[in-house]
Every structure is written in C-alpha cells, then in structure tokens.
Image 1 (cartoon, helix red, strand yellow):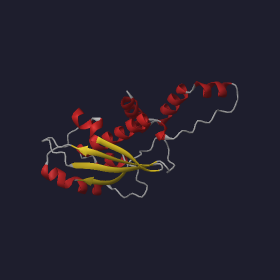
Image 2 (cartoon, helix red, strand yellow):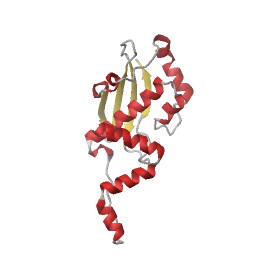
Image 3 (spheres, rainbow, N blue to C red):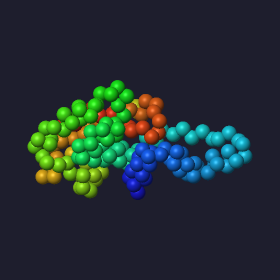
Image 4 (cartoon, helix red, strand yellow):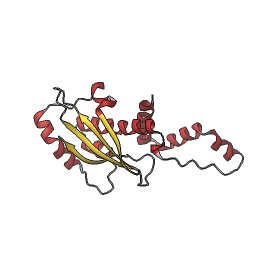
Length: 171
C-alpha cells in the first residue's frame, strides 16, 4: 500500500504539485482548522526518513521510474528522474552508460519480477545519507547490472524533487 501511495505521490507531483499540497492539508485537518480561526499553523517539519517504510517505498518508486525510463531509452525522462544539481548525468551520458547493456541484451525487464522489493538494497551510509542499489534484469534473466544511487537528505530541496543522485549504472 505504501508503495502505491509513493508511486501516486511521485506521479502526481510531476503533473501538479498543488494537488499534493491539498492532499497533505486533508491529511492534517488541524492546519485547516487553524487557518479557519486565523491562528498560526502548527509546524510539521518532518524528515523523510522518520517513517522508514514510507521512505523505502518512495525510494523504490523513484528507482522504478528511472528503470522504466532507461528501459524505454527515454534518456530525458531518466535524467528528470534524478536529483542532479551539478548536471553530471546528461541524456548522452545515460545513453553511453547503458550502451554495453543494450549491446548484450535487447530489453530491460520492467515486469513485476523486476520491481519487487528484493531487487532493491537501501542502507544508511551516514547521518542523513542513504545508498540505494537496484538490480537491472535483462529479459533473458541476466541480473548482473544495477543502478547505484545515493540519497542525501541533508540537502534542502522541494518535496516534489527526486531524491536519487546517480553514482553509476553498470555491473
């Protein structure tokens, strides 16, 4: 269920983030009441990792979004699925990173088998920094490739921005 909510949040945020704001207000009626009575809105600054299951679900949803874009060879969509303020990952660089994979295999598997939680490894690497690896399955069953990313929650960013900073794609 949490993965479905994370996926919907990610998809909706890409289309219209104001709908997410409305959704969050509905989940916190105390804010609506405070505004109606012209009172200060209670602060609810919460770290993403405070709810480990929801955090993991969001990371997996973002990895699946990236995986789907890579499978479709939609390099611009793959680039948009990354938090990359330094512009290290251009569409061309993503294409080059996957060229050896596609020279050996025809397609990336995006079936439910390739999206199970067991395909993703998420671990804390330090205070507010997480590492995420997701196995890339080829249609022929080869699973030697992976997406290797880092999530740095110490960086302040809008809620609708991707979390994943890509380190590499490869074996």
